[in-house]
Image 1: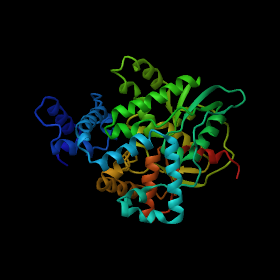
Image 2: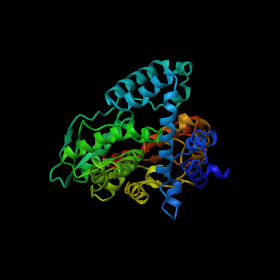
Image 3: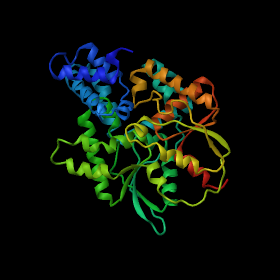
Image 4: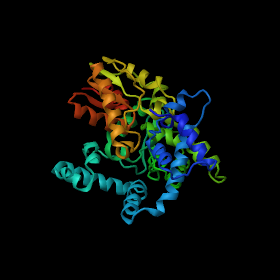
Length: 388
């Protein structure tokens, strides 16, 4: 690896652009900014506390603002549909998910290669119709100890609806009522990673306003990438006099679901899960949010489940938002490395806490022919509390 391919080298490049010693659109600079996983592993290891992720994301935003006007008409249309329309309107995303499900069931998905979407089709999760659309639902529990706002997100809502249902049940067993306001939406993480910072702020304002109107005590997230983005709204609006304080108050109340459940007493599980499991740590949970012990403590609560730690559990699996679509070669190398680490554990269950990780690891295991299920930690906890 060259010096410029590491965090220190990339920071030097950013400094050079800031001092006008290097052109913003020079091939070496733009290539390095987009090759970064933005996994935050370097932040967790940095003794000086440098916010490297913010530097890279800001650089990408500057690059995008300069290059966007030169996009072809086709590129502009696709970009606007993918980011502005699809992630900005979750009902449209749900409609797109229905079409994808029909394509998967009919076999038409095999034609994706004709449109240059072969890799996207290969990675696409199998949709089973279990989508969960936020529409103002409220789930009360007797003697409630508080009210939790459930963030449904975008990909989670269409592809991992059962995780949301399991989350609601898990929070309820711990004494928390749950509200799922319809005014919420995508967290904006994908937009930030893609250099669409202004659009990310538009999405963030919607979530902040929805939480303020909900009356909830805590904002619960079961997708690590979303949780990281939501906790960083304070940085997103640091220079906005109108939204800075609102974003600060919001970010202070955001918690990953494993953090919340780790502090609750749900009672005793009624079912044993006799299996070997290993834990795939999502980058934006372990590095960005620094949550490492809570997921493992929750897995330890499950009777019969034997946790075997994989080597390099906190090394990125190669998903990294849409990195596996934009940088397929590097993403595939990381995917194979992760799958090899999993197979060495002998696990039949891979636990994780992020949809991107679940999709990437599941696809990698399938390609390698290794039989293991990939499940969210909350799903495993839920199984332990549901009678067979």
